[in-house]
Length: 549
Image (tube, rainbow, N blue to C red; front, side, top):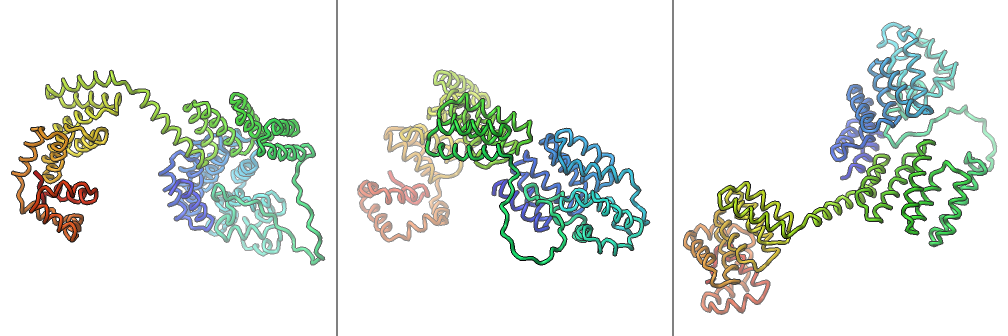
């Protein structure tokens, strides 16, 4: 499961008030993507919901460390500090966040209420445990809750709360007040209820405004929704739509004119700029595409554009560089895009390009002449018994020429001396994969399998070497040694434990073939022409149940 999928499950659990489950999902996601600031922010919210304020604070601080210009991180940290009764620190945190986003309503409202908590005594009604209205945690949550913070700025509600701080028994006043009834709902649903400041990062709800019960009236036609756009902005949207239609038809010149007109009408909407950059991309005007996206990012930063739009501009620059085969710059700008918004498609592109970069670096490093020099140095060290040094030279030789099977066979010899038999076997197999007729690789494989007490498989390797080179004395001697040192009864017992061997021996056709091989050895060659039969006979040879001379 990906980090984004785990985050979505965490958000759903948080919304369902299954806070422990939400924490578990966010923690798993962090293990996959430890640099995603949103995951720490959401887990901070979940920790706060179950009263783990110190853990909530730790995650909020991690959020800020990962993205220190993100106002939400300071909102998280400030709220956690208030819940820990550290109002001075909370005040400083809100002020710090406002340096990055001076117009952030949530931070401004939180700062104002934090100052009120510092200036106004809160224990009018005796011990706080006896008066929930005097509990600073209650007030902090209400101040941060989108559905209640506007009510707290109402003078009538402020007066009612002050009265209740002094005398909580006057709660009837609050019950009878239409504007303040929502405050009680927030308190009884768990110190802030519903759309808490600690909700999932992408699940915030619009602020709800209590409405008085309207008198019944006749249905009226629904008015058209107001878009709050200026006439120029509406005209810009029309131009963009015309540009999109032309773009789909690949009429790029017409699309460009409409996008440029949209930019003239609404110069701070960077969507029009990134659309214009897309046209340049299709026209192969890469420099103009990059320049337009950079301008979009600059305008977006100045006007607090949505981070997804800025991420899109960065991604488009990455695409442009990739089209130019400038892979390193492509990765650089994809990373910028991902720091703004974790888009799975962009992440996949980045990972693919990183793989391409690595492959290109390996190809550029290939030099058969240098590989030969390293191989000779490795051979000299091997003869002196300095196997670690030999290994270092063989490793370098393989990097320089990974298609030379002899290098893998030499390294297999070195691994054998270092008692790394499985690694030696892997190198032999790789050498054979590069050259299926490499006799020395089969002989070396047989020797390694003998050391690993795999007599049947060793005999099979030697047999293949003899098949390729009938006068290979080393393979002949190895095969004979395996045959002489094998305990037939032990070999048979071990082989019969193999399910594949059992299945072959139960096959009536194979039993007839094996009986014929005993009475007429020449028949073996005919049967080996059948690939399926050959594979089964090879398996029995490796198991040590039959020998072919």
